[in-house]
Amino acid sequence: MTLTTDRARSRVTDTDWTVLAAELDEHGCASTGRLLTPAECRDLAALHEKPELFRTTVDMARHRFGSGEYRYFTHDLPAPVSALRAALYPRLLPVARDWAARLGRPAPWPDSLEEWLARCHAAGQDRSAQILLRYGQGDWNALHRDVFGEMLFPLQVVVGLDEYGTDYTGGEFLMVEQRPRAQSRGTATALRQGHGLVFTTRDRPVRTRRGWSAGAMRHGVSVVRSGRRHALGIVFHDAS
Image (cartoon, rainbow, N blue to C red; front, side, top):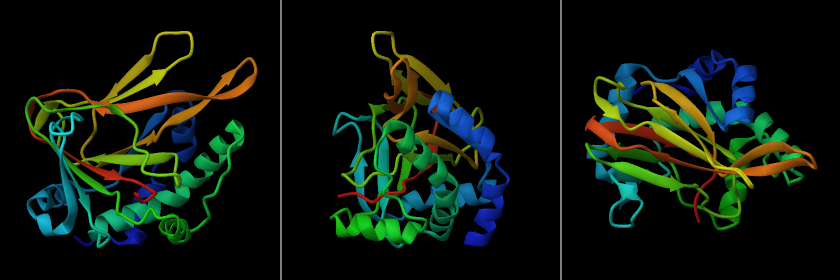
């Protein structure tokens, strides 16, 4: 795996971030361009068989999160994961700050990812939250939010590591928005191999008659119909 931070930045730059920010505003999620090659995707998926790279493994059925398995990397991240995280943070930071301003919330995120993570660690959130997920036939993920403590970055990225429709079917990424005094609204997105999907960690700004309010959102994965689905979860805060 030879993906460097400079190469990751080059790939991240290929995404139209103005369009992506507008889609995030409207839907709470938006797709990036290609971030990983098919070979890099296969190499990352294969890391699931190396338990020494992970601090813990979660059996989703055991915890009633759905069905499937995910593993949290240690802080000694594989180069592609570290490179993409560093390249994506400065692109997502303006969106995070804009959302905070609209919602009247603090925006504690510095320009540097390293400084932000140091603040997380100082607050007691010092465990890696980068995830490698695996779903087999019949597996799924219940709707939830990924909030690991008070130090929270409002956006994260999931990258598909297998080819939808060939390596697996079903397993679409789900987002559901809880709308006040109205029925919930859902979206389903098939992850493209090597492409990222940026999505909100907990909510998005929604314009109302009284100004901006927080539209609560949860995410999950639909039932995998066939094959095996791997995904990389890139989170920009660490866990408590």
